[in-house]
Image (cartoon, rainbow, N blue to C red; front, side, top):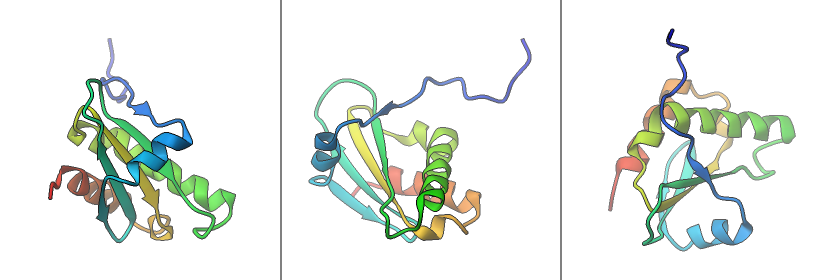
Length: 117
């Protein structure tokens, strides 16, 4: 079967409810130039879950969606393997992501996810 270039790992679970996003705010915060990463250890079994937030301060809907798409792709291609099972991650995107090279986004995301205080 030919290699299609798609990732062989299964997709990450997503945070879906407002309560899950708010719970992650009580976790550890890892600040960066391109995004804020909120990390909460659920103390449960199961895979990591991820959620994305981009506020209206960043720009109109087109800009916000572009930021979200770039974050999702960076997680899918580079950072998903670094995520710890049983942990929730909320990534709050900043406007600088639109103009940043994709390699920088992916590298910083992986580095922030791997870092532990």
